[in-house]
Image 1 (cartoon, helix red, strand yellow):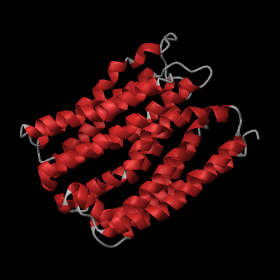
Image 2 (tube, one colour):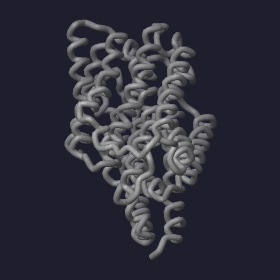
Image 3 (cartoon, helix red, strand yellow):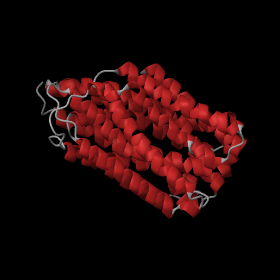
Image 4 (cartoon, rainbow, N blue to C red):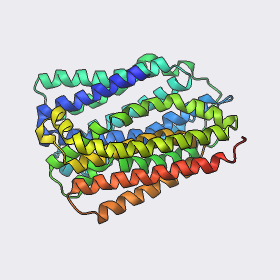
Length: 392
């Protein structure tokens, strides 16, 4: 899983590096929008489906798979995302109607991708999970290199975002899924998914909606691309972490079932300290070398300000610690409290964007850092409080 995740992250960044350099900041802007939509929906709706599938299969007597619930969630994600693309077609997608078809195919493909990976990890097929994660990014990169070599523009490149998600089915993830009569919504699955989606909707709005907010604040296409590429680069640890949480959720679930409250509380404190230290170091390192690093990898036209790089590096360090911390709340089935933490964080982020001065990028970057810090603090505090009710 670790090797597959690292290779996948590298392939994703090579995709951005090559495509950004070939197309340039302005032509590359629609790809950043599609990538942002895909990332937001994947992490907001599809990752909860994946993780709830893993949690379901990690307990002693798993419930029936809530297929109707999951299919309905994927369908809703496709409809809403395509509708958003239609409403912003002229502003964000160069007025090209073909991007609507790409958006629909992209979201349908990644809905299946998330469910398939959840089944693989839930059945402890971690090798196949890692290989599918690797293949998704490598296939997308290979397709992009071929099309860019043929001189295909941004519209053609958009289709490469779709193809990688389909390769997961090579590993036949449904092979070990038990059939227990007619699949239902499962015990509490609807409530768990609903509150988890609400939590991730808030957290991913803080994390990944930045380019859309910068664009809405009337920034230029070039500024949107610079913001997107800066945060994409500094999100590397978080991108790796998203594939690793499938491995740590089952042990946390077993600790909850065993009533190991003291152990859970100790992990929360450790992660809290790690997030605080990482956030401080991230700010200093991001401010010192962040602009040069982005310019070196992506070209001088993508160079951010030192302040924006510092916000990105610090906020991502905190977000990575928060991602691991929140697995404990998910294991506790405390997704409602998780939603509260991220909604409060989102409120803090929005308030910061509204009140802060400076360029659109600086305002949104500051909001990102504030929102992540608030939510992370609340998550750690909630785990400490809830774990006291567990058996020592």
